Image (cartoon, rainbow, N blue to C red; front, side, top):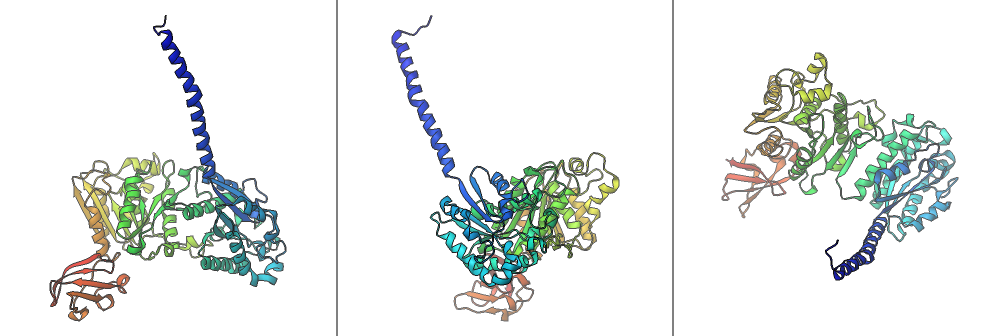
Length: 563
């Protein structure tokens, strides 16, 4: 029998009723409020285009794939109409379509405009090419009047064959693309380049115009990268291969290698870039402390960083190397976007990522000048390397067998093992390299770095090896190597740092005790800083020991005597 009194039972019943009557509706209200908030928070995108956007001849439309990739926070609408032109006087102007009018009712947050393919037809381009720029400007102006004040993104049309449907890829590439870029620059609009990634992909367009399923997956990747980079505060991403990567085993995130970009702040950008390869034994990626944290540190040094998410187990050689090579080509191709000097792009790797970096350093490649893809024409060999407690040899007592097995499989041939024991591949053409390694390192013995260092010395390659006593494997930024590395980069004249002041005439006296030194008149000054002004402080106005600072206030030289 219950010990509760009648009064107590009544109170409990009332309490339960209160819970049912008040709390449950409250929870329902909160749930509805949350759902409504989620719906309201969706970013609405209107994709304006022709039959390529509409999805002619394919079940997998890029618009639908893009919607899936962007996820619940986005609502992507297909506003493509087959055969339509941007030109108002074209044979089938987009301006006259119902979908054009529906965009104003949608009140989108983003509008992407990918028109121009049908404008390349002789009856359109031959008669009205001079009006394309004005009509594009008019469309931008018209969409700008929408109440939602949408962000407008111009899209360079994909490549096409010559003459299919009377469409001409050469007119698109040589005439229409430059006009779109000009309008974008004039209006400070973002541009998604769909033309370059498709220049060598006509095989994905069975009729030379409309992409099949794989072509639509490629286009969805290009749109995704652009929209994420242009509309979020996340770090930029660079997808290495749009669509399926070579050798892909699936379509999940781990099958699609990419880079996360950390641009150097404009105020301290030294025009240097480094691709960062995290370790993980080719069985994973230590992406945080050997990736993102390192990129943030490099940014503070004025260096742009690209954290590489390369493929690993079950992927085997040469897939990781393919990813690293592609990454280097992409950085070179887009260097001007980030203010990067293409002679100062390096690679930095930890542990197995150090093995990948040393493979990139020693598998020389100058690109394919005959390739239809502009990215593939760029060289993939780095200009310098930074290897941190790297796996170097895959043979003998100092090999890290876990990395070897993940990369090469359980029973690789000795020939294959030797081909990726990178101390054997160093030549006089190997780029300058900085190494650091803890000792003792029970996982990847310090002899790995010593082997590579000895090979560099034997081939007269600029190098240095910092052995850090007491540091176990995987110490990330927690060592002496960061400061030593920056000093070495200064010595190699990769980042600004060392100036030789040899003549009193190099110094212009000042009655303030501060002197201006003009870089072009200094002996030994390297070219990347020759056009900057340096401020030299001295203990008095007559000379003596000095401290030199660049125009950003950073010290670049200490205690140089001026005769």
